[in-house]
Each structure stands twice: as C-alpha cells, then as structure tokens.
Image (cartoon, rainbow, N blue to C red):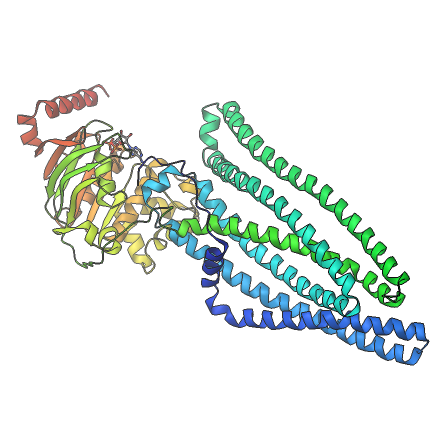
Length: 590
Ligand code: ADP
C-alpha cells in the first residue's frame, strides 16, 4: 500500500456482510433473540385476530345482539391486553440484545483502534475514531431498536392486511398496489438521503477532531492570540457541516411533499373504490367500516416500510464505518510474529535499515549499528537527523521499508507484541499523562503493580516528595494530559512509569530536557544506578548528559557518521568537538 493515501475512498460493504458481523457480537445473547422472535410471531397472530373480531363486533351492533356484543368486546379487550404484553416483552428482549451487541462492538472497535498501524493513525483526525466509536456504534444500537419496534408494528399490521384479504380481495389488491407505489418512491428518497448523510458524517468527524483540538489546544490558541483565525477555521467547518445537514433536510422535505400528496390521493381512491364495490353489492357497509377503521394502520404499513428501508440503509452506513476500523484492508493493522521471549538480554541491532514516513522522503538511509546488552548508548546530532525515528522503529511503531531490526538476534518481525513492547519503554520529551490519579497512571500500564513498587519508582524519578506534598498524595487527579503538572513533573512521572515497568531496554528521547539542573542530576544518578543492568539509549541535546555513556553515536541525515566514547570522539571527530566546544561556551556565558 502506498504511504500517501490519506484521501482513499472508504469501502461500501454489503448489508449481508454488516449483518453477519453484527450478529457475531451477539452470539451469547441467542436466548433474548429467540424470545424476541417468538413474541413477534404472537403479535402477528394477534394483529390478524383483532380486526376480524372487530368486524364481528360491528355485525352484532348492527344486528342488535347486545349480549353477544359484550362478550365479543371482552374477548377483544383480552386480545388487546395480550398484544400490549407481547409488545412489552418483544421490546424488553430486543433492548437487552441491542445493549449486548453495542457493548461488544464498542469494546472490539476500541481494541482494534489500538492495533492500527501508527502510520495510518498519523493520517487521520481523532474525530474519525471518536465519531465511529461513539456515534456510529450508538446509531447501530438505536437503529436496531427502532427497527425491531417497526418490525413488530409491521408484523402486527401485516396481520391486519390479512384481515382485509379475508374481508375483500379487491381492497386487498388496492392496498398491495398502493404499497408498491409508495415503496418505490421511498426507495428513491432514501438513496438520495443516505448519499447526503455519508458526506455529512465525513464533515462531522472532521469537526469532532477540530473541536477536540480546540479543547486540548485552548491555552496555546489564547497565548498565540489566535482566537480569530481558529474561529474562522471552526466556522468554516461548522458551516460546511450544517450546509450538508440542510441539504439532507431538503431531500426529506421535498420527498415528504410528493409522497404525502400521493398518499392523500390513494386515501381518496380507497373511498372511491369502496363506493363502487358497495353500490355494486360486492362489499357490505359494515365490512367497509372495518377496513376504513383500520386504514390508518394499513397506511402505517407504508410509513413503516419506508422507515425500515431508511434504517436498513442507515444501519449499513453506520455499520460500514464501524466495521471499516476492524477491516485490515482499510486500516492497516500492526503485524507481530509468534515467537515469545521472556528474558531478553537487551542486545539489539539495526542492519541496513531504510525508512521514510512518506513515499518520497527517506529519513533513515541504510542505517546499521549494534548495541550490546547493558550498555548505555547516546545518540547525538542535528534536529531532524532521524534519532527519534530510530526509537520508534525499535518499538515497532513503524515498519522499516527495508533492512532488519533484531532483538536478541531475532528479527523483531518474528517476535510477538509482548516480547517487543513488553521489553522496551520510551520516555519522550512530551509524554502523555492520562487524566487519572497519579496512582492510576501506573495501574493503567501495569495491572498488578503494588503501592510499594509505585513509590519506589517515584522515588527513583525524584517525584515522591512532590507527590507527598499534594493534599491527596498519590490519589491526586492530574488533569487532561497531566495539565496540572509542570513540564518537569510530567517528565518525571513518565520516567517513574518507565522505571516501574522495569523493561530491559529504556529509551530516553530528550526526556530530561524540561528538568532543572538539580533534578536532571538526580535523574542522571538514577540512570547511572541502572547502568550495567539495563540497556539504556539516550537522545540528548546537552552533551553533558551523554559524557558517561559507553558509546556515543553521531547521527546525520539518517546515517551513523561517527561512533566512539566521549574522549574518542573529542579526539577524532571535528564535528563532535565543535558541538562540545559550543556547549562549553554556552555554559560559560550562562
Ligand atoms: P530527530 O529525533 O533527529 O530530531 P526525527 O527522527 O524526529 O529527528 O525526524 C526525522 C525526520 O522525520 C524529520 O524530517 C521529521 O520532520 C520527520 N518526521 C518525524 N516524525 C514524523 C511523522 N510522524 N510523520 C512524518 N514525518 C515525520
């Protein structure tokens, strides 16, 4: 697959495909589905019995048989009450069924989002996933419930149609023709409507993503005094979204006018046909009164037919958008091997690795190096040289275009997820802190972590004293993205999380850049204590933090241009010497 395929069109799955996938999630709710089905059949039977009984009731009135009328009315009451009960249970079981399906789909979709390749995630706005996970899955459940209610009503009304068949074949034929006409018109309307809805939902997910950015970036927007341009962007997106909503309304409006008028004409035609039948002696007035009494319900059959059609299309659209996330042909999924290693020693190697985020721009250009376990190795070089990319590739966030990366002499493509990610932690300059308590920021990454382990990790990261100074200590909420913490505290919390995971390979990606000198020295001491036990990789701006490394690699334009200890590089590499002298000068002038 090409890397730059941001605007690829989405798949249209068949209805059958979507139904099959939906039912896969409801396997353990078979009982509710069967019960729902049984109650629906009962409803259909009752639906046919009620009008026939009503016809009898009317005959008794016209014949003056008041005693029998009372008995028949009592029977009708019992039938109607049992219809209500059947409705109640049919709804109950369909609601149980829908809740289960929704739960399972949402959990699975969230799980699948976590498996999507980072390169595919990079290309999409967060709105794509938020809307599908929340709105579209919700629509599937709502449609299922609406659909079930409509099907129940539909079946009941089919029973009524059957009663019409018993009463008058001509009127029955009339209804069949009327239903067919409305059905065709509704089908055209729905096609137009769904086309507009598809575009609307694309706009909606873009807007959700932008609103998310508004909330997350509100401080920067304020400080940058960018309220006006940002509002312009929001206003454009919201306008496009609502224009589309209006277009959908227009389709609905226009077709409602046409279809409504045709229905009124059909209603008049019913009376005209009945008039002819009565005058010619083919229909009694009392039977016509019955058909006329129930005509609302039969015409309701038309409304229900169009609603059902619309919901089926809507279901197909929502389910298609949701199941697209699960489909690895649309959103590429990360692939891992099957080999599992519990105890890696921390050796790893890059062999002639080429990689670019985009098709025409190679970031790593055939990079090769070997790191021995328990070494501390630093990467230095200009910004944009490809240092962080090396880390991302080692954690398998991206796949190399060619070449191999191996851990413990095993190609990482052969290793399972646990063997790769369970053995590596990356501490970045801008770590993500969850909007949970400090303690939960540990339990979310390691279920069975003990309080003592959390405290120990925080002590190593020089964060414990600060946490203890907070009124709620380890139970303090840190705000979205760790908003209530300073940059340095966020980094220390990320470092503590990595310490707590005790992975064999730890990558520090300019992780101490936001720390003051004293804290940095404290963390440096903690890293030094870990030396010889862990494989530690450091990307650092300040050369002072890399002096003690066993090996320093200079990266330039996606390649290793020099390797050695600090002393060796100072002696042999002009570029390194220049960098070091510049830093010394900077320190002297501070
Ligand atoms: P360094 O860590 O040496 O500063 P990086 O590895 O972060 O460099 O980046 C190398 C190049 O890759 C840069 O040109 C950067 O713009 C580009 N790059 C980094 N991350 C991405 C990404 N997710 N998508 C596209 N390009 C990226």
